[in-house]
View 1 (cartoon, rainbow, N blue to C red):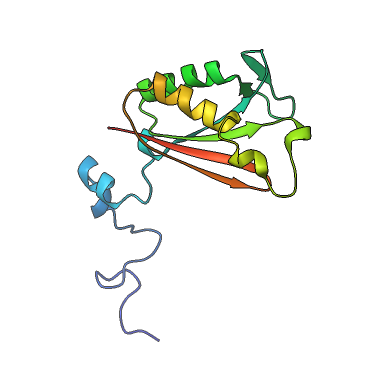
View 2 (cartoon, helix red, strand yellow):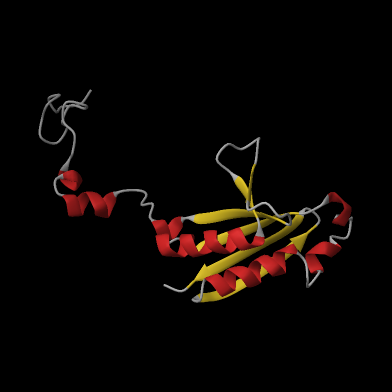
Length: 146
């Protein structure tokens, strides 16, 4: 058994005593907090399609749309204006264009290259863009200049 009384200064009784020294002022709270989420942490996912409609609602995901190439460029410009620095582009291509080798991802005149070109034209300060193709489709990551 301990020789200290239950409420001595060296052994305060928990939870009666809680150390709050790191939470007394705003700057200290900001210093010791675990997570900070800012607009710099956001990635906007844009699904592009090759049809004439500007936006098509995705029934399985309320509030999510498939955008035409031209509309996707406008969305990219709006994202830049809001401070979102990264966009991931996901193509929604016709099933007849899909194959086991993912050849549509390598098509220079395909949906993703056209969407990237339109977004670059709409957002003048794009610093880099990279595309990756896989069996499931292609993705684009565009980084805007700060």
